Length: 105
Image (cartoon, rainbow, N blue to C red; front, side, top):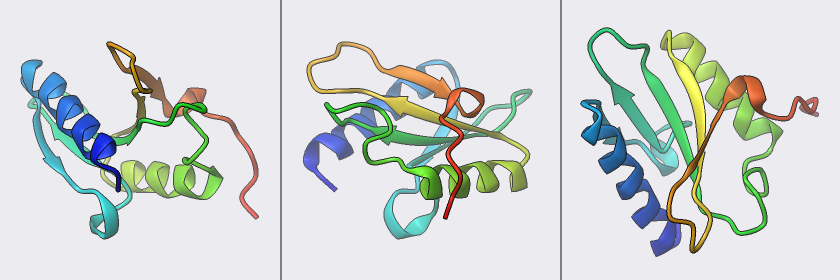
């Protein structure tokens, strides 16, 4: 993972923690999500963080989306993509219902 990617994950965690979410980093081989966020009275959030300039789905293909969605379903939570491209001041949060619906082959 690039240092920009790790930096973005830390910033996403800080944003969520500022809204009273408890977060942990679960990137790489640890799971399907980069960040897990929990808060009393809210559905768990499993978040994939992308910082690609080419678009939110450039490195978040159908297989990865399906894996994250399955993990969120099992956890009784929501799958979110947090796309924070270079030079952007704020991230774009994309709920799984708004992701492309390509078929996994």
